Structures are given as C-alpha cells and as structure tokens.
Image (cartoon, rainbow, N blue to C red; front, side, top):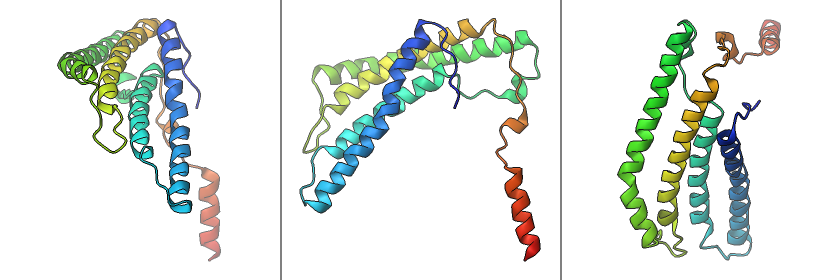
Length: 190
C-alpha cells in the first residue's frame, strides 16, 4: 500500500497517532498466544487477556478510522465525482466535510456528559480483572472524533487546489489474466 503524503501538522500528528493502531494487533496476537499457552499447557488461565484484547481492539477501531481519514480512504462515489466539473467536486467535498463535522459534533455533544461521568467515577468493566474500559474508551471516542473533525477540515483545505484525480474502473478489478489462461488450458486438457 502506498500511503498518502502528509500535508501539514494535522496529517503528521494523525499519522504518528495511527501507528499505535498498526502495532496493537501484534500485541493482541502475542497476549492471545500467551493465554493459550498458559491455559492449555500450564492449566493456569489468565484473568486479563480477554479484556485487554477487547480494550486494544476498541483502540484499533478508533485509530484505524482516524488513519483512514488521513489517508483519504473514506468512501467517495467516483462514478459521479469524476464526471462533474471541478467546482461541483468542490461542492461535494464541502458537503461531505460539513456532514462529517456535523456528525462528529453531534456525537461529541451527546456523549460528553456520559464520557465525563464514566471518567470521573473511573467506571470499570465489571469482570474479575475489572479494567477501566468504560472510563477510558468513552473519552477516547470523543477525543478521536475531535481529531477526525480537524483532519477532515485539514484534508479539505490541503486538497482544495490539488489537481483532480481521475479513476478508472479497471483499477478496482483484481483479475490475474495469466491465472485465467492457465485455468482455461487445464480445463481444455481434461
């Protein structure tokens, strides 16, 4: 995968922040392997691996969304986007950014009270290990949405004067012609 260029301090921050999302799956796999070894080899299961993997999985989900926004990997309907003039593309970009900002603002506005309450009482998960997953994840959701909002606005600003990209339908088709020819040759020989 070729990463999108970093175009400013917001991209640089998001890019570094999202690197955590790329490391955490390996950490989850490592602790799961540890759990399997402890449970089935030594018959001493852990109390913390399941909740820790849930906790990290939630972080991965949030940070990956932030990375997708920085990489401009969000959904865009190119069949419409590519056929309209540049000024209409700008309208589409502004509308999508406004939609993102409204969604993030509404979610932050609606979830702020609950996030603060969970954090202030240091709400725990309610299991044997009892980690503070709700106390940390609820505020992290709001923090991530704030950064997503800033990233969306930054993308709009930095991409405004960029040359328009054109997309070809064949870019999305992942067919290996050589494999098809080999399969046809094998079918003909039988």
